[in-house]
Length: 269
Image (cartoon, rainbow, N blue to C red):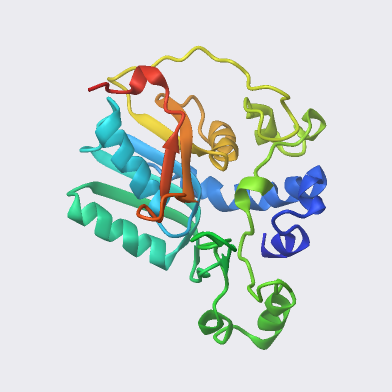
């Protein structure tokens, strides 16, 4: 995934190549499949592609508790393909302060987060908190692996990205890839090439069942891969937006924007 992240950095034309995305998703599925298959009981489950800074999962849990009918006081399980140690510590502190019961399952550990590049005229920073290889880790690796990873250095900012922009790499491929990448046949979303429009499925929520939450856009491949890895999921499955953003209002700064939670789940005051 690091090699492909170097071949198709954010904003490049290469990310539009379904062959590159297909190869990337094969490695992503191999990483997350054993995480998804690990058995444990849960009331609320969040399946995510990346845990970088920890803000999206924390912000998503706050939104669910304050704005929806979904309870967060029971057993919470978070499954992520790749996570940084910083993000794990943030979630650990967050759950302890809010007295939440969290089980965190991770496919691959990572360790670096960049500050991002300044965006002229704003407080925002481009590519802040993407997952990177820090020098402290590179110095502990064998010379051959270190040399290989250093060949993936981004010429613009000098960072070596672990997984690149996983949301872009998670775009679906055309249906001709369904056999080679079987999770692709589970895609119902329009994030990518398979479906020009979202496949409309009637919304149904059963309070007596556990709930699985996915954050778009990276959540769409995770939902598809969970559909392949887990047979007959007996749980509510919901998808909504939880994006790291820089607010236009200076007093709000950096945080999480929550959007597109289904209206039937919302609590109106």
